[in-house]
Length: 162
Image 1: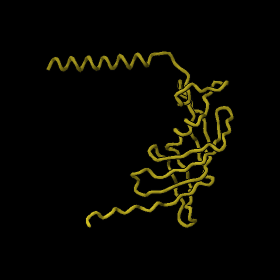
Image 2: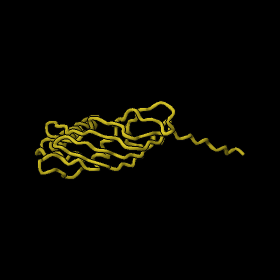
Image 3: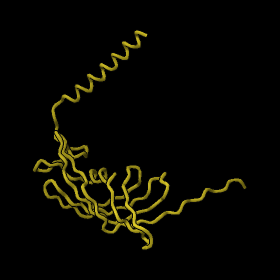
Image 4: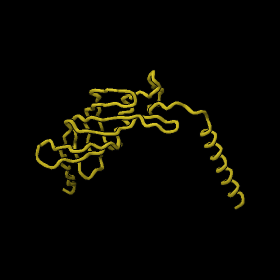
């Protein structure tokens, strides 16, 4: 019992030491979340395709009409586990703000209750958010330009009891 307490204490001490030693290192410039040092001459992080692909997740676009023209518009939140094809159509960067037009094809995540396919263009407004050390691009607004959705019919399970 005593050995178990000592082992737990040593493990906790090792964890605290390793966390403290990495947290007390010299501050480094943020790269905007791309994993590489992509800074512009003005010192601000570059808005790369990789950052766009990552940050589109959890962004929401409103008033997406159905392809058929009949039915109610929906709002759509992009999910990490949904398949996406993203093409940057236009990117305008002005200091710490940017506007990016994206052409996106996506569909519901495989386990979603209602399966939908969406495609079209959206406008995204970006801003560099600054913390104590971290500076990174974040989406602050989205606007639907031409994105539409269609419901995908559910596949019926095959009857294997023949």
